[in-house]
Image 1 (tube, rainbow, N blue to C red):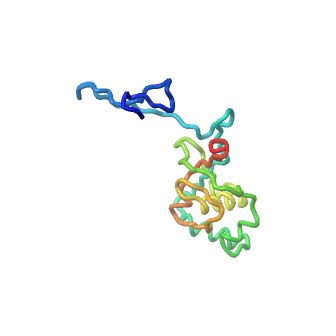
Image 2 (spheres, helix red, strand yellow):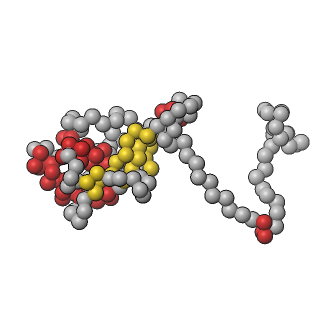
Image 3 (tube, rainbow, N blue to C red):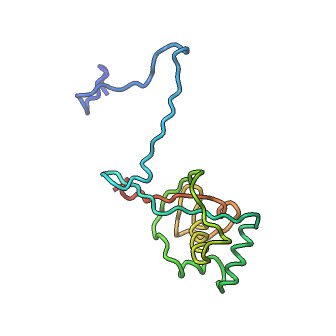
Length: 155
């Protein structure tokens, strides 16, 4: 930037300063609510891939899923990787909206429950990563998440 305050790279626009400059009585707070997540169309796309969330009732989530694994004849959570088709690339996660439904472990099909548990075990609160080990904890299995593909955003 040159001393006159104009940006020499973009000579058509002056430098921007984000100071309201008013007294404290004019200070205000703005709440912005907007997201690119879930946008399927246009130049910038971040489509939702899947919603994940299980309900266990009063049962312990880790013990319940370990029991389901044994009953289905699987050696452990890692053995589910070859059974279910899951996304092969990293995805961004955000919490499920409060009104979004979750799959009941008691009433849902065993395959659907185990697939969701596999994917939840590959998630942190912010990221789904198929390269990480499958970790089943009360925290990971208790999350409700929406997974989004950011490929349209960064390409």
